[in-house]
View 1 (cartoon, rainbow, N blue to C red):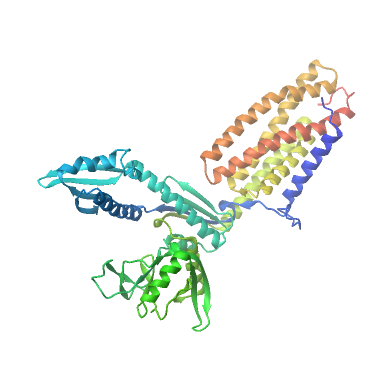
View 2: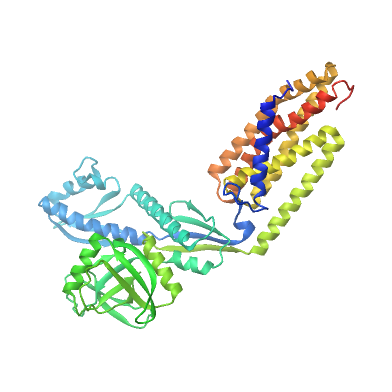
Length: 517
């Protein structure tokens, strides 16, 4: 029936007032933290940067294969199986075995029950050709192995990218997977896109290594340039400690030299290695290498056993802050390349907001005029309900501090149309009921009851579409699906509780009128 108990009226009133207050926090400032929430504006509304990053997995594959060559040597050495001429070319490992051992080698990398099972089925082996002295074999990543490696690399990269962006303090960044080797980064309201591009473009692979003049170093040597690109130095390939051993890094001012430095602290293992290296290497230069370039190469004057140290290199405070950020967040598993970049200015974003608001205002005004002309007092009730519906919808979005995009505004406009559609169905059904029923209360109650199935079915199908868009879409498409989905629930609430409550009050007071609608 159209009857509403006092408890139900109280619930409807409190619920509506609560979300109207929450929605009002976007316009007014409240002291209470619960009400001091706001809807965040998306990239297309407040401006910012859009970056599409591609992961270069080539170094990762090479490193994995390099590690595997050592494992292969040790494994078959323990089995007294001799392998010859092992080398890496074109992302494959090539080696030679005598004919009598060829099947054992092949079975090792193809049999899931073999003792070296951890490498199955990530790798595949192929017989190349048979020579007089044995058999040449090729070992490389299988298709499944490459997918697993790329997925792992992408997951690690996303986590590191998120840490770096969070430390910069960007508001509501959107970081998403694209395929198995790309990452989409949306940074609304970003003031300094060049700084973020620089941070994301650096792998931040930090190592400490000795500078040496001995080309016969047992670990091997390589020539690396300093950051200025002018000088170079011969550095041992032996890594004393790496970025994995860092616990913290912070920019500081050296009071003695009045220069900006990066102070760092090491974990227990790193501190022990660093202490041992500095005790045996007094008088030597210790190169601090970041992404293949020497930042600085100070001379070791004394043993450093405290597990802390500093990096100097003519930093500005900004560059020292960025370096400390990179070291704290950790090294990327693979280099990232920016393959697409777009910048949306705030003026364009404001134009989008204005265009969306104008469209919403025009659509809302036309709906109000149509409903009032068509249904008179009940059209007025519908219009009041629409306004409350919008406030509740905005209140829900504000409560969860959702990000509003231009498609999200389109979802709000669509919600207005759906809310009107539900009321039109109800009122037209009531007209049909009044043709066969003289009692206005029964006719109105029947109209609400008999139109319910059609309205709910229509909204459920739309809700299913919104759910699919949310899980299958991305960015702005998700914004549209969220506002549309929330709008469906607020529409059903306002239609069957608020509009019905106002309707019941009016019909109860005018039950004896011959024509109410």
